[in-house]
Amino acid sequence: MITLTAGTAFIMWLGELISQRGVGNGMSLIIFVAIVSRIPSQFAVLATSAGGYANAKFVGVALMFVFLTAGIIFIDQGQRRIPIQFSKRIRGRRMLGGQSTYIPLKVNTAGVIPVIFASSILYFPALVASSIPSNNWFFGPVRRFIDTNLVSAQTWWYVFMFGLLIIFFTYFYTAIQFDPARQSDMIQRQGGFIPGIRPGSATTKHLEHILSRITLPGSLFLAGVAVLPSVVAIYFNLNLGFSGISILIVVGVALETMKQIESQLMMRNYEGFLS
Image (cartoon, rainbow, N blue to C red; front, side):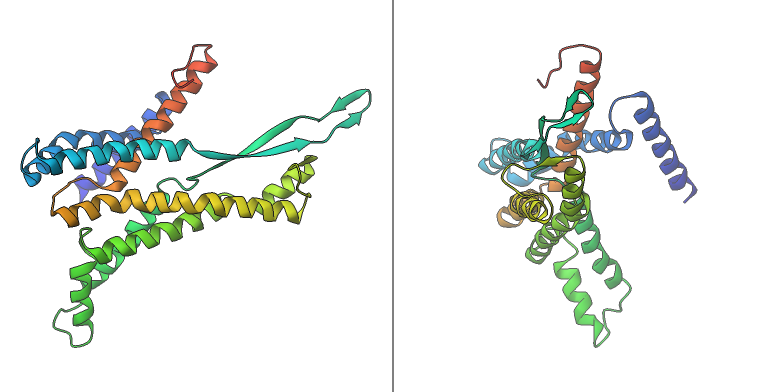
């Protein structure tokens, strides 16, 4: 216990040190390195399970992860830009306003938070079931059902519940992150409006409509990325060693770190590598 506590404290201190003196979020980068360092051994396990590196199953799974990575990058960068026009105002001898900008609404506003919440919720039944006697006449069948269907990620019940929880938490977390009523009020107070939409409640309803339309494909894609490795493992009877959460974390941290490096280069008048 002492060693575990000391190790956790050291990792937290190291993460804060990287955040202060380096680029990117320190803890995220440590998790990123831990996941990436296991990739060679996980591919070796996958090759053994598939029957060799030249086996069609291994090649198919490898291509699947390549396309998943490309899809995550595409969805993470995707956004719906809502145009905002500011009316002209005369103050003294100066004319203010008249400019136009936009509100960027990301397709995946929630990031990997819904996946983390969903996996945590699914861990709770297994934790409770471990304290239930298996020979109990009432709770015994409940424990056996949980042990059979909700403990391992390579069961259809787990995949189904995991996907539903991810979709639910995507909507839930997006609603917390972006408040259409508050955004509409802020636009109106600054003298702005969405072209073709009345300020006030009409703007709020318009923002809610757009948010719900872009959240649906984002939540479905997030759930698909998270459960697809498990579906492939069940269907082809493979030991992947990978998870959708790992791919999401690796790609998300890499993109965020590249954006921070890009901003640092632009501040120092260097040409960025993302532009």
